[in-house]
Amino acid sequence: MNVLRHAGTLAAYLCAVPVLLVTQAATAATLQWLGSVNGLDFEGVEVSGDGTTVAWADASNKLVMWTVGSGQQYLLGPGDTQQTGKVRGISGDGSIIVGSCTTANCKTNPYNTGFRWTSAGGVEPLSMSGPYLNTYAEDISIDGTVAGGAGFANAPTVWSSTGARSTVDGSLDDYQIFGMSPDGSVIVGMDASPVTAHEGATRWVADGLGGWTRSTIGTNPNAGPGLALAASSGGGVIVGVDSTTKIKGWYWTAATGIELLDTGIWSDVTAFALSEDGSRLVGYGDAGAFTALVWDGTGATPRSLEDILTMDYGLDLAGASLNIASAISLDGNTIVGIGKEAGSTTSSVFYVTLTPVPLPAAAWLFGSGLLGMIGIAGRRKRR
Image 1 (cartoon, rainbow, N blue to C red):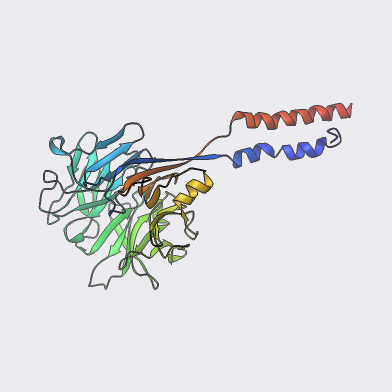
Image 2: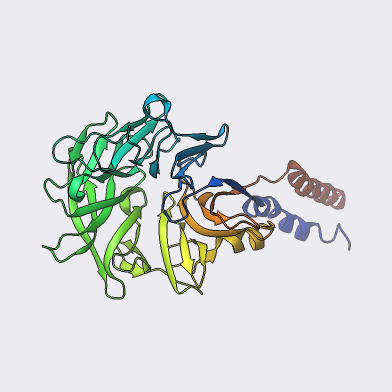
């Protein structure tokens, strides 16, 4: 090839090289196993918004947390005792964990008690003033200032960062809360009232004055009454499942209303969680065996997390199975859930990261070096 003759063509082509090098950045993935888990609690593995902290109940229902920097530890309560129960939410930086405890010195009645954990106070029961003796904390905002759940007889309840309790809907005891948007502005759940004949999935939107405005998301004729599980920031995307069989997963947006999730090759699917902007959903599918699934978009066809790791990132799972994707970080790059390590018959917590990796400087040098050569060749030709 005559470099001088084709200098202009090469220069035009190579000018695009740096752009391609940026937009086509390589990626890497990791898979870690964190410890035993109660495999029947599909939503019982939670991850912080920044992806650095994971919490769950182990095979003995003891409350456990794991951090990237410090590894695994038990969540301790009064008298530095190990606590049993369920984990349901973690703040954005992992400093606050909420759920329900069943240990005698945590609960103050015969029923379950919602708890808040911090490194300073350990596991502490949430306020249960008035008739609300049985409480559940189901989620928490990323800044940790508001937790949502249920009081006795399923009264929708929120707790402030100080632990103060208030009901979301006054005396409407038959509305249940199951999730909260990361920014804490939207709470989602269901209408379980026989009076209203189960109107379906429900959301509450903060009114900016300390109160909440309730509205019915509705139902889907192919799924029946809805049960909303999670919401993106601002509540623009909500995911849930039918409240009867719990196997027909759906998504909601203001533009589409409730639509069934694409099932792909699976007979039944459910999405439990979504990224902050709602662009990535995670859950599971059932086709004779449970498989952790990822939807990259509300209307997308699901892919198994196993396929993503092996086909897109080249990881060798060595016979391990990823069965339930329970939670996802704000950016959608950290996914946690329940699976089985290779050769094991017991359930464990998996921790998956999908991390963009910047290209090495050598790639830029290659492109800029060629452009330099073209420039020199062009000057020589003009002489």
